[in-house]
Image 1 (cartoon, rainbow, N blue to C red):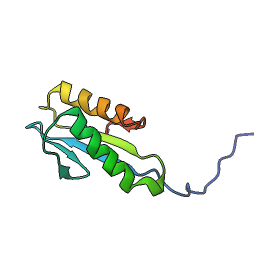
Image 2 (tube, rainbow, N blue to C red; image 1 turned 45 degrees about the vertical axis):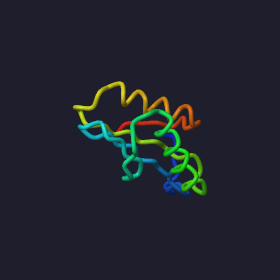
Image 3 (cartoon, rainbow, N blue to C red; image 1 turned 90 degrees about the vertical axis):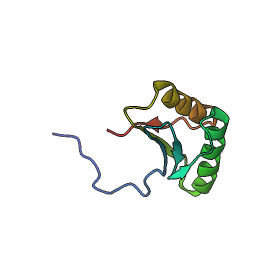
Image 4 (cartoon, helix red, strand yellow; image 1 turned 45 degrees about the horizontal axis):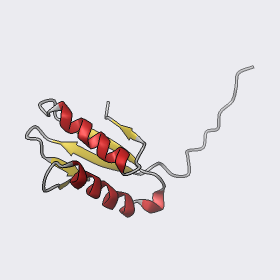
Length: 93
């Protein structure tokens, strides 16, 4: 006898905050360019995006970076998310 699973889709999928870093090191949150790459600036933009999606539960931060991006900038983005209390961070496959 095999275990069974429900066929129902979840009521709602988690919302996402898209954080992108291009080859020049420019950071974008949900498609909006940030004025600089300082952790505090990234953190403030993440907080604003989180407030906009607050009705959908805790959002997932999806960090995508160009392969030419400095590794430190991706680490700074993860730090900013952590400092903002966003613990669900992933990278696209």
